Image (tube, rainbow, N blue to C red; front, side):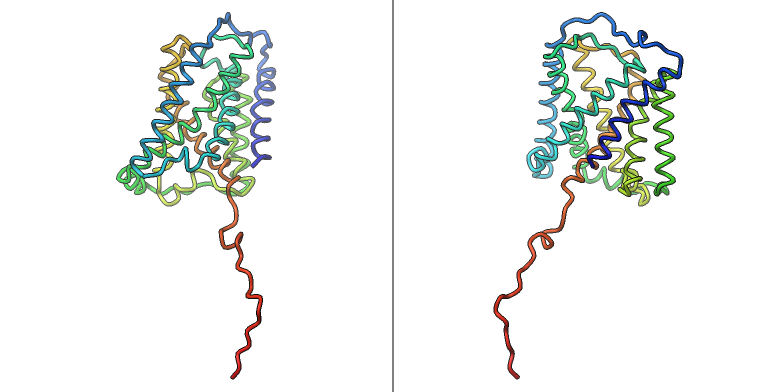
Length: 288
């Protein structure tokens, strides 16, 4: 898991500047606009999104008697750390795409608050997905979808890796935002296949669309909610809210795949393998 995440981070950091330079751009084009102190907006959005995440967890418990935020506490803490890393990487990619503008200083306090805020979207998406998944009728309906052959093996991994590299290089070179936003998902899929792990699209072989659709809808809900909250307190101006919807859907799928990668840390042996029964210490002799 750690090796894949390191490769994932390195590729997102290194490939865009290479494409940017190949496109004939200069570093001065990435200069930020005038900024202002925005601690209040970030803090209010942080509290509001945290409240939404906790509320979603409580609603899941009301419907299933199981709150994933408490029963899987360590997993969601790890998701928060991975999510903060992911959103910072997306902010970094935005320097090359300029999909949104933010008016804030990069002070120590601002960066600290931003990191706390960025730790919330991935857990929020997965808790929202759990809430949508608690509606059994919805899942049963979506489980009857058409089955699709899903790519697997090293050849498919190389295809996804090539698409990711093209998106990161071409998106930065041409300033095409959608190329940059699809690349992280392609890259994570490629790494999963190279390591012979499953991807989130494997369930489509059986026609089960529920997990993917619920994740995409969750990304749409959390993405719009976060932007609306941040914009309401004067923190951000979305350049094109309609085109951003595609990015939110992709973000939901990316959160789902990242959640599967992080969950591998808890993959272990069965209880019977860990707690093996000891042989009876006294030999038993049976006389005929």
